[in-house]
Amino acid sequence: MTEDRFIDLETRLAYQDDAIRSLSDTIARQQKQLDQLESLTRQLLERVKTLNEPVFKGTAADEIPPHY
Image (cartoon, rainbow, N blue to C red; front, top):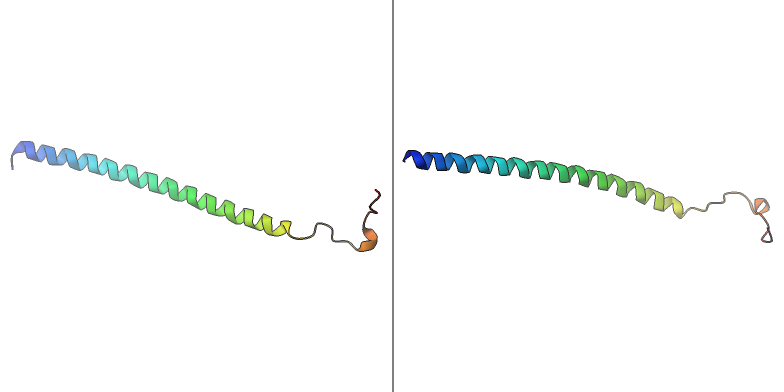
């Protein structure tokens, strides 16, 4: 191999290393974002479940009459 071919291969390798590093950083950032979204989804599901529960937990005697 000639010197020019070595330089070309080294240049390509450097660009590929940079691209791989950039892709790895992107994947790590997206995974962090996915983890945050999963956590938020769990929290929202818990809130929705509590919305189905009755708000008033007293007895019928404790209720305010309809004319108030």
